[in-house]
Length: 127
Image: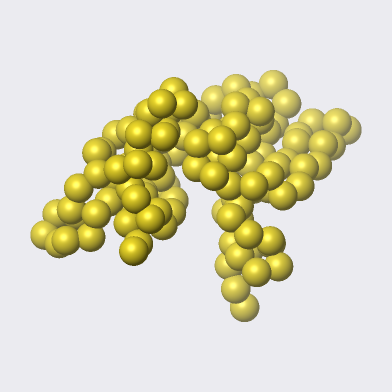
């Protein structure tokens, strides 16, 4: 068994695709539109779905925002340069909620950004 994808409900499909592909460097892998069922899907990721886990972005027609709840934590993404990724997100109009720096009690450099729907994304520096 392996992890296939994580689904996030989004309020504006194109805005979310632009964030994940334009600011975080993912590729748009495929899309599906189901007008009869009133939803659209977009799959984004860093590699092919046969080899890597991806994100499934789901837009339900007529819903432009969701309550975050208290159960979801964050998505983690490896980055060669967390500070540079934060600058890229900021320059593209994204929100950095924790600047790059060592994790509390450790030495690994992390940062947090938010996607347009408020989902937290932890950036973890990998050399």
